[in-house]
Length: 452
Ligand code: ADP
Figure 1 (cartoon, rainbow, N blue to C red):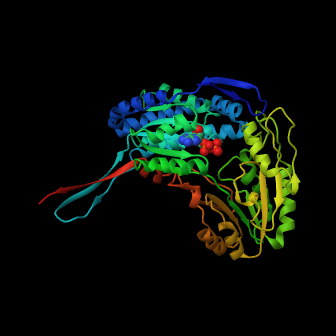
Figure 2: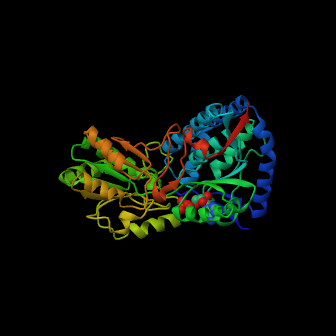
Figure 3: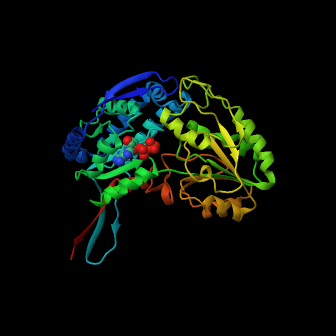
């Protein structure tokens, strides 16, 4: 199989060339993970916690190296990459601490004692995307290992470098051989093997809805456990009674962060019609202040898109779009796309319905609360969303009515390792983070012991 050639998205320079793993190499990794599982599940909880904490601390000690590697491979601004590297360490710490806290229960029954156990699944396959490579890896590796599974991480083939480094750091920290392996190769062959192979008991996937559907069909064959974190077209709902300065100051980050390559991107900005002009003026001013350019520069707010192919995909939506604002972007080399804001009067254009995964915000006016909810929920997706209002009762009414899994009020915030994260409808299946995710990495076993 031909080698993978990786380019820095900001410069187009080749930064690495590495071989694709073959299906046979994936099979060997799966066999090794299965063999390592016997010992790993018997490591005492406190020792598993210690090992995961050492892994977290080792990542923390290499945060700057990981951040720079992520920026060179993926193009995200170095400030974001540093945040991600530290968040990887924090996530691993959280799940290290969770090992001894994911407890079973005893249930009152007649004639005996009934108790439940959370048993590890065995080998789990973790398939991650290119937009937040190391962060997404930690979201899956943390709970998978904490729950006593052994894991194969299959990162997106275009951004594997930080995942490979995490694999090395795990070994350096004392995680035994075979407990975490990183296998790089194409999704449709090497990745698909995780779906097909009977020794892999669960697949955890983050990526496109189209591939998620295919994996669900594939997993059906063996009733294989599957969790999916997929696309989104989330709404940022701004009511007329909101603090418009705060809402407008936060809106660019909600959609242009990571060049819009974020499944939580609030790419539909729903604004109450009576404040549309006032909000737009502030939103445009806040967006114009975003520095777009060299992602290694600490002041940069937005870097390039990840590849030439992805740039072409985003341009298919943005070329010819009637914008109210188009920002500056370097002309090249690199895969640059400017920030764009456009207004749509209804949900019909594809740009309002489909996930663009680029720095393009669609502003859609609404009349009242019912109209806002109708437009928000008129989407096949339901990942995240925000509501801006000073009316606490309205905030509660609207968040309860929104068909989305991860919502914030008067904030953009989406994801914390200690709170559940995931989507409604075609945005996913299952949840990541918090103690809830551990249920997705274990089987619940019930045992009755007769005492009479
Ligand atoms: P994106 O559209 O964000 O590139 P994809 O859904 O194509 O996302 O890819 C996300 C991850 O899924 C990557 O690691 C990719 O290699 C993997 N992948 C893609 N197709 C398949 C497949 N048929 N089977 C298993 N993994 C796949």
